[in-house]
Amino acid sequence: QFPFGRRLPCDIYWHGVSFHDNNIFSGQVNKFPGMMETVRKITLSRAMRTMQDLFPLEYNFYPRSWIMPEELPLFVAEVRMMKDRNPSWKPTFIVKPDGGCQGDGIYLIKDPSDIRLTGSIQSRPAVVQEYICKPLLVDKLKFDIRLYVLLKSLEPLEIYIAKDGLSRFCTEPYQEPTLKNLHQVFMHLTNYSLNIHSGNFIHSASVNTGSKRTFSSILCRLSSRGADVKKLWSDIISLVIKTIIALTPELKVYYQSDIPAGKPGPTCFQILGFDILLMKNLKPILLEVNANPSMRIEHEQELSPGVFENVPSPVDEEVKVAVIRDTLRLVDPQKKKRKDTHSEVLPRLTPCSVLCRRCQSLEQAPEAGEELPEAALPSLCLKQVFPKYAKQFSYLRLVDRVAALFIRFLGVKGTTKLGPTGFRTFIRNCKLSNSNFSMAAVDILYIDITRRWNSMGIDHKESGMCLQAFVEAFFCLAQKKYKSLPLHDQVASLIELCECRLAALRGKRLVWGCG
Ligand code: ADP
Image 1 (cartoon, rainbow, N blue to C red):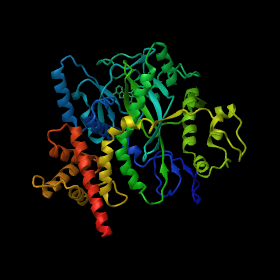
Image 2: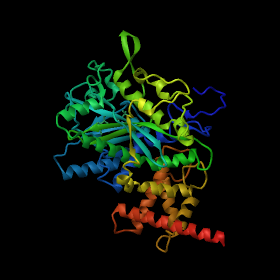
Image 3: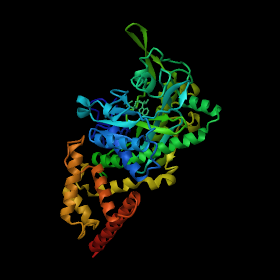
């Protein structure tokens, strides 16, 4: 706890829900500014769509999605077109309210005309998504995986994945969706918070039975059936890295706004909950990313009608304690100091010895001031995947470079939106205006795109062009300039041109400065 009035800074701040305190000038905070907004269903779907436009094959792990209400006509038209092309296609869609969680307000439909337009969709935006009809089943039940991912740093990008996760099971045997079973949430939705209310929910003291199990127990079972578990893990790692690459542009805009470079401020890290569904053919599909995953290691048990008690949940404890312990171990400020000073002595107990009931029984907690050998701790459950595999994925970081241009022209510190003057300066400095594209046309482009994004915007606090609107404008400019190329090459060429012209301009300014 950080008592009100305390003056001494802390080395680690553990915020409950989101980054919310701008009065921290040092240390580390367990949340990134803007993460909650960035992983909301609509924002995530938009970021994924941008990546799918640029890299369709690499990002085919996210179901095709449409944003309601503004993309309703597009949704209707695309579904009609696909049905015309393939009359045997009998799709199902899942409607998920933006900002919802725990399955709240979710329903399945067979046809676009089944969207409940009255009231809710107008007042409560939603994402409509292709429903994955053929999930992998275990014991005839649908399940999903909750994996914990530590984003240890944004710049440079550092990602860790927990070696084990949770598998959360439905409580009714699965059947492919039909008009008759669409409403059966215990069959189609894997949310713990829903299924716990089913009479079939099984709390188990073992990690490999019941309605919540460890992911490793599922992997064991798959492996014994001959499945290629190594390939599955590598696909999951790739899904996680690609998803975070899709999120980083937006996160960097929030970061520079809340913690401007050059001013004293904290660094951030964050534990994210990735919800993943396995298809029958073992392809992992991303369902969503949670900015504030539950770290509870107990569940409620009804002892007698209306009387509840919190009892330990061995599965949650097995997975979550290790995640928290390793997170603290990785961000441990004492470790950093030890590295810096080559000191041999630990001045305090490591957080692990305080937190982990299991590891306390495995090893003696050291006396204060005594060295705790790293080897005495249980092995790390968090495995570094980035920068370890950076080489394979760095070509995907195109939008990151567009975001770097955006941030450069934001001008005023503390803002997340680009004004018309900033946009004009960007065009002028990168020399993108010419006789075919006048500055008047630049202004029209800015106004058109900004107005549209602000009319559907969630954030009305600031006026101006948000990052996603800038990305759209940038794609427009790239298409204009490099008509004959595919979209990815258009965008990559324009980024290179802009970076090159800005570097030349910087060079000139330096020479003038010296002169
Ligand atoms: P919430 O944040 O409300 O839990 P999710 O996106 O996680 O929303 O969806 C809830 C549940 O619905 C998931 O746990 C999963 O079981 C199911 N689900 C979500 N999207 C899909 C999909 N595209 N295909 C199949 N099942 C899905």
